[in-house]
Length: 129
Image: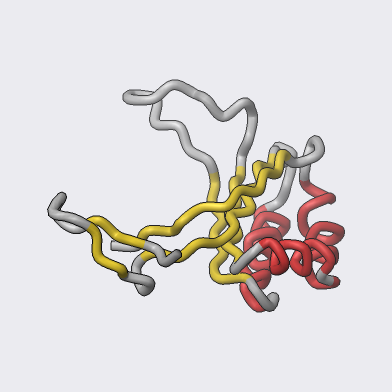
């Protein structure tokens, strides 16, 4: 069965270019307050380099923010969040076992986190406008 994208409430059109099924791998990090700017840069560059792993469709990482004037602090101490979009569950398995992935965890993530990261994986449709 194909993917469908609803258009203007008038029905559905098959549109595989705008909606694809995949796996999202979400990781929440609590970094040490004394992490240096160089260590943060290494973290960001390392995470961005994950895009070269076979089966990885996209990667994003960013500092968690709270705008005090319009939202409550819901972060629970999380300082960085990252998302890796993968082709399928097989790609997720290969990604987890990839030597480059393990090196980034060892060299860029582990030295600057205060506790084990929270990580979740889920299957979803990515809808692009």
